[in-house]
Image (cartoon, rainbow, N blue to C red):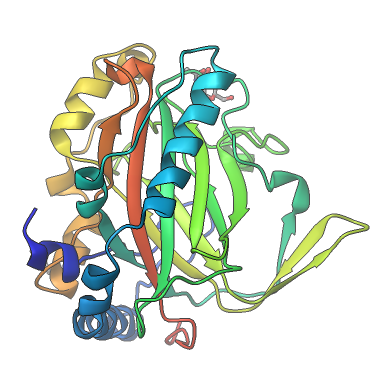
Length: 302
Ligand SMILES: *[C@@H]1O[C@H](CO)[C@@H](O)[C@H](O)[C@H]1NC(C)=O
Ligand SMILES: *[C@@H]1O[C@H](CO)[C@@H](O)[C@H](O)[C@H]1NC(C)=O
C-alpha cells in the first residue's frame, strides 16, 4: 500500500441496524461527512508522527503475544512473530460521534479478550491501535465495544432474532497505554442488504462500578464499521459454516455504508489488513487496524 493510502486512511461509517441510529436526515449525514473529512485532514497533518514513530518492537511484540495466546488456547504450536512489513499496512478507520441517547449501560462481564463463546466459524484476531485524530498519538483508556453477526448472519442480544440475553460475538476491551485493544472474535457472516462487517463503538467517557460490574458510558459514543477485502470474503465464504448462510449476499461495492464512505472523502480505507496466523484461513486470521477518534467531537442533528 502506498504511503498516502496509509495516511489519508479510512473511515468507517455508522452502524445501520439493530437499534443504532444511522444518520438518515440530510443534516445528520452532512455533519458526519464533515466530521470525517476534518478527521482525515487532521490525520494527514500529523501523519509525520505516525511514520516517524513507525511500529515499535514493543508494539510488534504485543501483536505476537496476542496471536501466541490464541494459538495456546487452541492447543497449537506458538512462535508467531509479527513482521514489521505487516504493521506498515495498517488501515486507519475514523469513528464518528453518534446521535444516541445515553448513558449506556454496559455489562462489565463482557470485558474479555475472547468473545467467540461456542460460535462456529473462522477465528478473527482483531489487533487495534486507538489514536487521536488531532495528534496521531495513542489514546489509552478508550472502551471499545465490538459486535457482529455469526457465520450465518444472526446477532446475539437481539429480540427480533430471539437471541435476547445471549452474548456471543459481543465484547468490550479498554485500550492500554499504547492505545492497544485486542479481541478474538469469529469472522462475520452476512444478512440481507449488507456486506460483511463488524460494528465498533468507542466510549471515551465512562465509569465502571466494580460492585455491580456495570459500566455507564457517556452520552457521546463514537461508532463505525469495518470491512474486508472482497477476495478474502470469497475465500472465507467457501468454508463451512459460511457456505450454509442462505441470506441474500451483498458485495462491498453494493453496500450503502461502503459507498457512503466513498462519498465522504477522497481517500479512505475502512478495510482490515489480514494476515494468516497459520497456513489456511481456517487456522485463524490476524486483522490489524488503527482506529482514530476525535474525542472532543460532538454528534450532529438527529
Ligand atoms: C447463528 O445463530 C443462530 C441463533 O442462535 C443459530 O440458530 C445458528 O445456528 C448460528 N449459526 C451457526 C453456524 O451456528
Ligand atoms: C454518493 O451518494 C449519492 C447519493 O446518495 C449516490 O447517488 C452516489 O452513488 C454515491 N456515490 C458513491 C461513489 O457511492
